[in-house]
Image 1 (cartoon, rainbow, N blue to C red):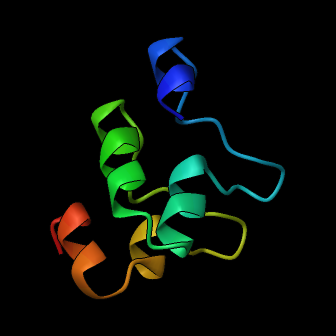
Image 2: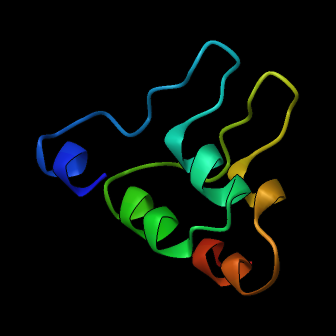
Amino acid sequence: MEALITGKADVKVAGKHGDTALHWAAKRAYADICKALMAAGARARVQDDEGTTPIHWAKGPELKVFGV
């Protein structure tokens, strides 16, 4: 992930179902990855095809990453 961000990968790109790298990291409660993606420009309020955002997936202490 660090190599991709350093290499200027677009962290806002969504997959075919609208999910982003931030959705993936939030679903798995990877708070450090969420922080790094957001610092690189990822947006926490982007909805996937089902209308869920990375914030929906965050649980417990990980919510602090999103300011919730």
